[in-house]
Amino acid sequence: MCDEFKESMMSFFDMTDLGNMRYFLGIEVLQNTNGIFVCQRKYAHEILIRFNMVECNPVKNPIVPGMKLSRTDTRPKADATLYKQAVGSLMYLIATRPDLMYVVSLISRFMENPSESQLNVVKQILQYIKGATELGML
Image (tube, rainbow, N blue to C red; front, side, top):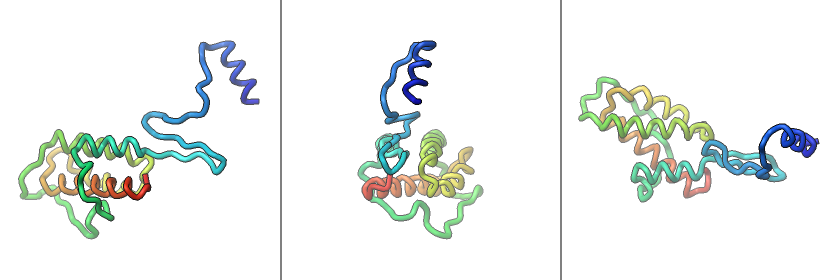
């Protein structure tokens, strides 16, 4: 039935059959007899390279439990452009990593005027990603 559909589509449209999907919008698609799985291992590694965190020490938690972040933080301000780029990259990563959803939504609240302490949380998330890639969790 699938072959008939492909042939009918090819008769109307200019298309080719590339086989099983491997990547879609930066998301790796793994298909086998057990099912279809998605991951962003390559994208996570690219994030680590982009923000110079490839050689960082991995951590086991994306944020320190009980940590409070405040808009009225008196610490020095961080580079807002760098912060926005990092948070944006992490937002795309949560498509396959729901364990990061809470902490990424938390740090995204400070995009307008980030402080060094909020940037440190972003770095800790990147260290968590580093640890996850080493353990094969991505």
